[in-house]
Image (tube, rainbow, N blue to C red; front, side):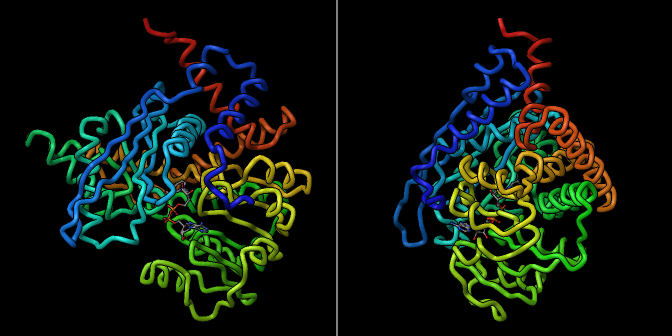
Length: 423
Ligand code: NAD
């Protein structure tokens, strides 16, 4: 079953996508070899004194996949299922995403294997700071730039930035703000970052809607995961007249045929940590959730959620992958056979890293852009990327995932062709 995470080889799945795309664009075999493994894989074990006085050892990861286009860039995940192989897969996907979006970044990813909801606020702060300290010079504003991912947020990014700035000389404190992105505005973050991933998904969906004469007003959507990405997607689409009729997260699934108030549900999750107990939703099973008739299905939780069974029961026009790797290859085959469109993760959710880039540029220049400026730039960037992927897919008669991978790989190949391999 797709939700059985452990047996799923996410890294191999991503490598298989690369192999297929490499064939499609006749990629230089040397480039394929280089991209087959990350440049660096770091594991740090660090102790933290818990509130009870007990000392607990935590395992943290940072995988730096590739930096030919710029500093390593990618999220930090705090989740009990974090593993080296999954982080490797996610780091590689960041390399493709940056290349696809023409950002001067490479790919990285990291995290800590623990449940952030199981510790106190003070413990979370200590864990974050000690992890950042353990990473030391392995991160940096010109070297490797973390951002939020599952289980992390702007508050945690603020702690990381503050810890890092306390590790550099006093003359450098102000210039290292860009060591992480996704910070709060007060800490030097950018307007528009919190909703950026969801906003990017919406811009892609608008392009797809134009191609397919799809009308937003009166349409329905279902969303798995109601955290940063999923909840903002619900809120943004509600402004286009789309109602969220079923939602799910780690606590379970709820339906409301009349449509949830996405704003209120978002506030509820911020207060309570999950959708559980939200008044106005009827509990349903995971199977019922996937089978709910809807127009837009947005997986915004974890990888490997849409397997063959879920794909066979899905009753949607389009899947917009907010999460990284939510559809497994078996699930994807069935969705494509059933003519259910997919906007693939490295395109659909790349608004997050794109606005992270805007934050990094603002930090470098000590600038503060308006929300409109951030949104306008993001809209242009997403439109261009969607257009390129859609054109490539039509020209080569392939699916959008293969098109997105192919475009990214060709851009990386072009740089290796010029720079060649050291020495
Ligand atoms: P988040 O921690 O804010 O939310 C995660 C959501 O997933 C929560 O609602 C949680 O309850 C749910 N979830 C966890 N385990 C689940 C399970 N077993 N079944 C169902 N739901 C489960 O994280 P987020 O930042 O919204 O990230 C969600 C996805 O989007 C991840 O795949 C992440 O890599 C991807 N993503 C995030 C960003 C970003 O900017 N935050 C950018 C690009 C991609």
